[in-house]
Length: 527
Image (cartoon, rainbow, N blue to C red; front, top):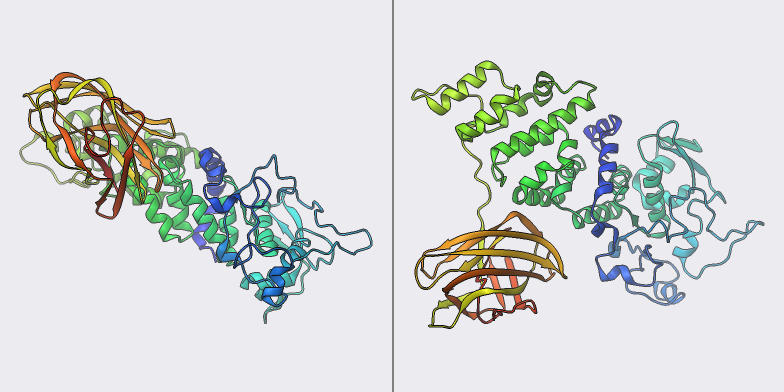
């Protein structure tokens, strides 16, 4: 059952705001990502195949002795296309069940199809649910037996020792659309999820202990996880007690903290999750950016409480989270231009911090003294050696490029490049990351090489999320007159800790770089 904290959160309306926020989730959440989503179902709609394959109608019953087995474990989730799905669960009380006026029904070939006829159908309904808060509730017909065999909660409700005989049951804490998604799964094994209803559906699945549907919701959320929604999904994963989703959220937040804490979703989280984020030592972010994110959160929290966002009210909203800011880890200039002007600190705190930065005898502070360690970048080296030969390799403003894929989600922070083989030299460089021709990140900068065969890192502005088992193209265009080192004895597959990278040639490469030799010797990443 959902926790008391979750119920309180729902009652205070914070989850509803998060559901609205999730409307901003990327298009990747609204399109099937897996081949399993492309079989014989309607576009935008997924029918779960019975366990054991896609037998023709009629064969399934013969093989199983006339009854369907539970196919929930083979469930694939398909986002709903509202415009194309004429039988969307949002169309409450739509009769799509082929029930004739005399009460008879068109006979369907499988048990599941016959069962699905009765979904959201008044015919033979022996219980009704009034779902949603007063004023926006919907009445939903159902059949006790179908619900009871799919949910132990419904079984106890209808057939347990304390079963009540009510034929109308009020459920004010579940959204009508989410409840219909739950019922549709119980009737037909079909799962239809959307970005703006998946959290409400997860709540309903947890409430009624329908584990396969809950797992499908979590998988749906993991698939669309990225920096701008990671904080709000972290909060929800903690409320719903989903440790694997929590772990994945932390991976994204740690590696892309600058983007995650600047997102709208960060301003939606509850105070406990805020404290958890601020306690994190592995955030890749400057403390000045943390402070600005915290002030944005405090302003949003004041508005949620119906308060003017004055400095004093912001301080009150932050509570003990204020003392998780690592202000002593800032430089004196950062502190003077940031926290000292924010007015959320007392005069005594401001004085003590200035003394901490400047005085020989430092005062005791309530703030953590040590800077955040951040994540340690890892390097994937794809060449076994580097070489230099006269007139062999020169940067001439042409593109050096290679394709790569990783077997798990990583965050590409930058690339390593070879520098001049003829002494100290400065290069102008443009690095890019693309997927299927779409530009994901670009950085134009300069770097100086010292004439050694060492590689020199060039960083993207922010680490870029790289999804598993998909090829990306990384490229570099350098401008410099000096001859350079180049890699040789390249490898098509490289193991870096728990991550395996694969490399292949890129058609964008016009300066000779390929898998076996050339430039871009390193990928710099977090995992």
